[in-house]
Amino acid sequence: MTIELCMGSSCSAKGAKWVLEEMKKALRENNLEDKVTLSGSLCLGLCSEPGANMKINGEVVTGVTQENFYEIFNEKIKSVLA
Picture 1 (cartoon, helix red, strand yellow):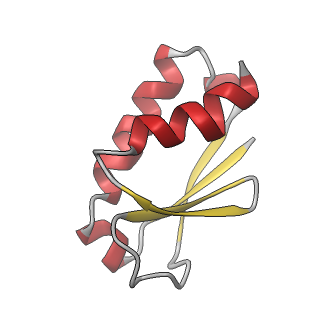
Picture 2 (tube, rainbow, N blue to C red):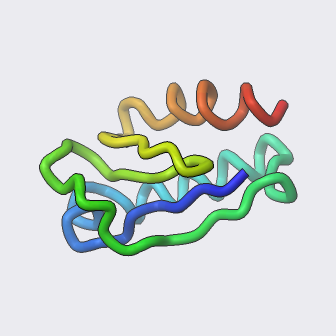
């Protein structure tokens, strides 16, 4: 699985750094580090959306925040790889 987290200025201002650190932690805690290629990307062009944006296996996921991070992680990553 590939996960690309937008690190553009808009997403950075909306918490991308927190999402990146939390993603690393969640992958480690769920023993999924070896199953995921995690990288940063330039702007995904969806800057008007709230929260940070990312691509998971090419699917754009918008509006990632502290409030919904674990819901997205469990649904789109953990359930697919577990």
